[in-house]
Amino acid sequence: MYKRVLLKISGEALASAEQSAEQSFGIDPRMVEKIAQDIKRVHDGGTEVVIVVGGGNIYRGLDGAARHAMDRTTSDQMGMLATVINGLALRSAIESIGIHCRVMSAISMPTIGEPYSQRRASRHMEKGRVVICVAGTGNPFFTTDTAAALRASELSCDLLLKATKVSGVYTKDPKLSNDAEFLPIISYDDVLRLQLKIMDETAFTLIKDNKIPIAVFSIYEPNGFYNTIHGTGTFTLIR
Image: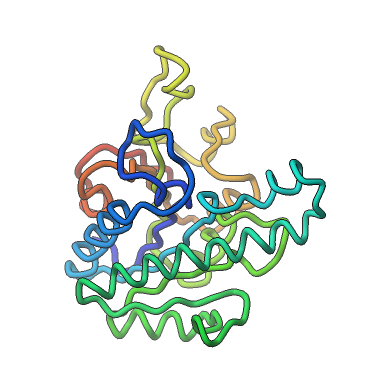
C-alpha cells in the first residue's frame, strides 16, 4: 500500500475509450467516467491521490508553435489552458460519484480553481479529497511530465504513476517492432542507458534525484490504476 501517489494522465487518454481508436482529440465522457471510477477505488482503499493532467487532446504547445509559426511562450500558455479544461471534466466526473475533489491551478484563475499551494494541496488530501493539478508548472517550456515530477516531489508522493496507451515499458515501440521486449522492472540508470523515452529528461532527472518510483501502465486496462497500486495487472516499475 502507498500512502500518497500521483497519477499523471495524458490529454490523449481522455480522447477515446477504445484502445484501438485513432481519435486523439476532444473528450470522451466514457473514458473520463472510467478513470473516475478507477480513482474512486484507489481513494476508497485509503490512498491519497493527486492528479496531473495533460492537454494534448485539445492543444499541444510545441506542435502548435511549429505548425502555426506562433511564438513558443504563447503556444505553451494555450496548452496550459487546455489542461484546465481536462481537469474540470475530471473533477465533475469524480464528484458525481461521491468523492470530494479540488482543482488547483498553477495559473491564477480563482473563479475556476484554487491557486496551487503545496501546503493546501497536502491538507486537502489529508482531509480525504482528490487534488487535480492543472496548468502544468505555470511556465512555458516545461511539459506536464515535468509538472508531475515537480508535484510528486513537492508533495512527498510514494509513487508516480504514468498512465499511457501501452501496458508498460518495452525495449522498442511495441506498435512498430514485433521483437519489442516487455520490461516489468527496470532501474533509473538502465532507462538512461537504453535511452527509453519514459518522460522528458528534466522530469526524469527530478524523479531520479528524489528517488520516487515510477509505475507505467495502460490507461485502457480495466482498473489499471487500482491494480498497479496493489501490485497486480501488467505494468513496469522503475526505481
